[in-house]
Length: 95
Image 1 (cartoon, rainbow, N blue to C red):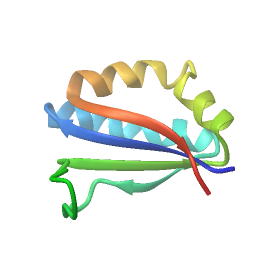
Image 2 (cartoon, one colour):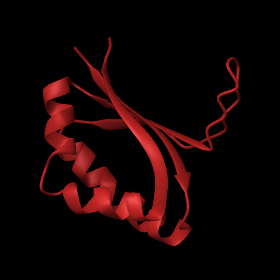
Image 3 (tube, one colour):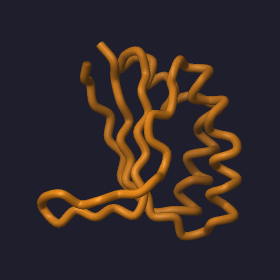
Image 4 (cartoon, rainbow, N blue to C red):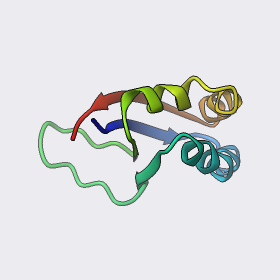
C-alpha cells in the first residue's frame, strides 16, 4: 500500500531551505519516492487551516518511506531543513 509524507512547512531561511531542496530529491528517488506536491498555492476550505507551504511525497509503502526518512543520507538534510524552516511532518498509509 502506498505511503505518504505530508508536511506543513514555514521557511525561515530561504537560502538554507533552497540548499535543502537542491539535495533532497536524490534521496527521495533513491528510496522509490516522488514529490506529488512541492509548495504551490494553498486555499483554505474548512477549519481555518492556512499553511504557508505544503509538501506531499509518495512512496511505494511505509517501509520504503521510513527507510528514506531514517537513512544516513537524509539525516543531515533533516538538520538542514529544521534549521531553515519550522514545520510538521506525518507519515500516512493510503491508496
